[in-house]
Length: 117
Image (tube, rainbow, N blue to C red):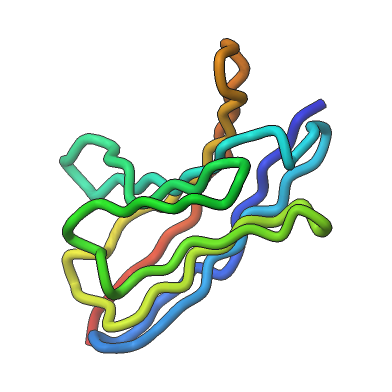
């Protein structure tokens, strides 16, 4: 049974930092492209950052220079280091695993990040 479990969310002041983790189990983690999505109230879910099985990373323009995605294949964990957080970063953050060239894809349950005074 595949499980993706996010952790590290919470309340932070503008300009602060948080690190999200996504712990994966039940799959061959190193074979999957991983990504972070977020969904703010009243908005559609959007991709924030992704990292390929080989470690190539990409970001949505709104977080470039502030967020860093990484993965540790030995620990089956993906991270999202978020810095210089803004109120508009407030959302539920989800991790996703996709095996390239297959229909295999999985979502975590989501974790709340709130940026506010």
